[in-house]
Image (tube, rainbow, N blue to C red; front, side, top):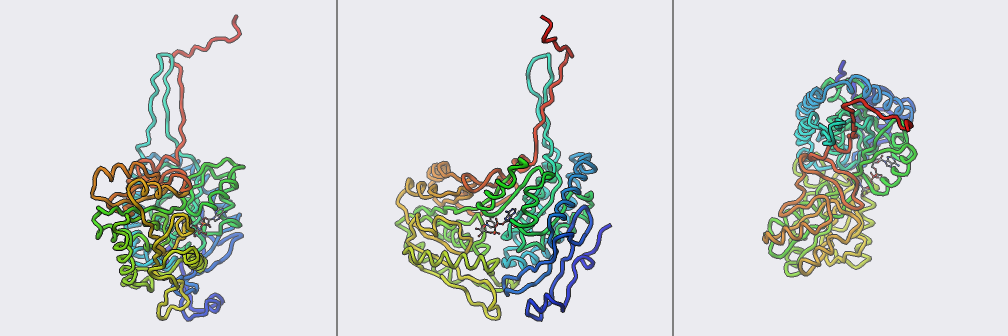
Length: 517
Ligand code: NAD
């Protein structure tokens, strides 16, 4: 039976947390975890606050899980995998996923608001992003019954064939910058492949994932197929999921250093992994490009999500003959960015998702200044009237950056663009590839030959030509080098969630006695 949102999420006007929050605002309460198809209180977790980054104060109280809660969730996922879900035909799983996709579409406007409260993303962005994921869920559903194996040509004595089978119980660990997108890109293919899932959203942004649980319940998924357990990382639910012997695979989006730790911690149980990690994408503007469009893309992608996306073109490589023109355009465009309350329709850019993230960005701005880059826009916390406790940072641009400066090498995850001049194609490619990362890249040129030549030389999982951040469910996404392992989306999406079984059948049944002579 499905419980309503009002039963699940309560809103309170008073209490300890309210006093702690120091405001007269109402708090939402998400007091239960979703495990085994039931809304349950944490066994050994507790209650945590989700901070509204626009105010620096709690906006929701949320249940989080501990080790025993993860144990319960993994047991429920295993029972579902070996029970009703495992027995369900692929087209039936697809039908359930489509039902969920339709419910998601209906809920998307509210989900977008929850995401914006949780991570501070401007509502216009959350809405555009969250509003599209139902199509992705439909795409994944469409792949569910198309994972056939093949017959292997041998000789008449055997008939050999392969099958593609779900890997089992998946632990999905998601970050705070795009909780709904990351959940979609993991839950969709895992379920379509026939796996069951324990999803642990980031501790900073747990609420939208719990909203998803209600939609899975309403869609009629068997208990235990999807379990949603907010919790902490290294010393909490995340680590317990990674080390749990009952979990077959971890799919993770977040920081590279965390991925390395997860890899070590998962080694004892020989887990399989998919990692979607960071980026420091080169966005190359050749002088022959349609510069108006290129500048739209380069400025738009420098500050989207307040700079908190692995796909952003944070290294803007500009051909020297148009460098000053592009730099001036960046300064002018930065002045037009409306920084403000995430839920205001007019706001272009909200705050950073946490105080830690704001502090990290400001520390990199200081490094940029120390290393001799030329600050041509922003460079300080942004003041937003009435939101003095918020984590706002000005859209920032450094010119005359060299590719060995920290602001060009490290993923800042803040609204900081680094403009780097270059001369000619070879230098552009050399600079583009001179990075530990290899997730995305962009280039702008009107020369078709140059577009092909340059795209072919860039070591990145996605290369955009005369466009940027064009992300779709049908286009594979993932990184070369330190940007990750495996691909999400595309025809490849289910691959990381499948095992291959080869079956070899003798057509004669004859097996010679090895010791006959
Ligand atoms: P993170 O990698 O620490 O956390 C991401 C997720 O992993 C969260 O759910 C967290 O609880 C979990 N986690 C953390 N440590 C874990 C562990 N040892 N075992 C299991 N789970 C663990 O990222 P963050 O602290 O949220 O952000 C830090 C930096 O990561 C950011 O500044 C940014 O540079 C980068 N980041 C990248 C992406 C991306 O999409 N590539 C997303 C978020 C953050």
